[in-house]
Length: 186
Length: 133
Image 1 (cartoon, rainbow over the protein chains, first blue to last red):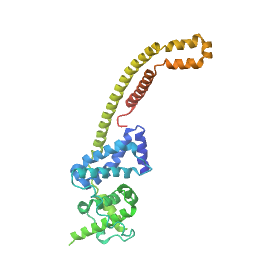
Image 2 (image 1 turned 90 degrees about the vertical axis):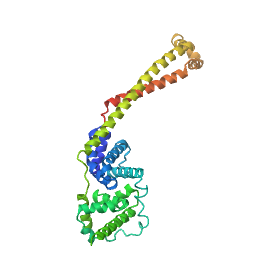
Image 3 (image 1 turned 180 degrees about the horizontal axis):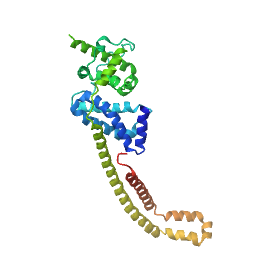
Image 4 (image 1 turned 135 degrees about the horizontal axis):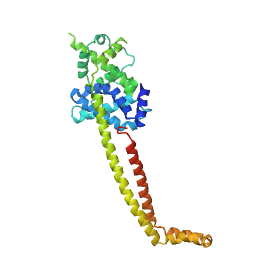
């Protein structure tokens, strides 16, 4: 997968414009999905376009030794979303990060996941409504891990956070999800 | 493990999909921007080529005139007509020859020729390059 991305980038940088089309086709849906979760459907398409323009303008700066293309694209996506929300005054710059500091180091990585309630979660509309309500810092970890199949290492690289912090954040997010789910069940 | 599996499956199902033409629209926008940038670069480099060509012609003309005024050609012709004198007084000859060179004009001419060469190279690259690449 990653080799394929690097191959397309090399082809594009060597002068094959269609190679970039391949990258756009591959990443439009994941980027759109991630963007919609933070800015809503009305602004998402324009923002996705801006994100790809940034990717296109900076593609010659991409270094495959430092991060995978997917991580790099999602870093640009996250920064663009943050800038957009900050401009709209919807989000303070630190909102993505604000909830983790107090607990990041005191949760065991191997601790059992909160299961029973989450196993019962089967409705995608319910999941989407819960994700809308959960804090951005939890939401992004859940989406990157479960929807984009990123590893905790990749997420850490993207969010610029240590591995254990990401793991704790993931676990806290699941606990919050469970809590919200239980609040809904009579 | 079951929770993870279940969540992976559910998250995949819950993915928001864009309208079908979004990829195509993005590609077209980027292609349009790329074409605009290429046109702008072509215009810039072409203008630079024309300016540096005119500058080069003028500075070479001035270089020839000044070389003549400073007696550079007289010293140079001496090398072909009386090589014996040059062999004896070669140090003085080299100094006189260097002294008769219009250094400023020479530097400006070389600089303009260099700019001309680079701009022609860039223009030909811009014409060869495909728009989005």
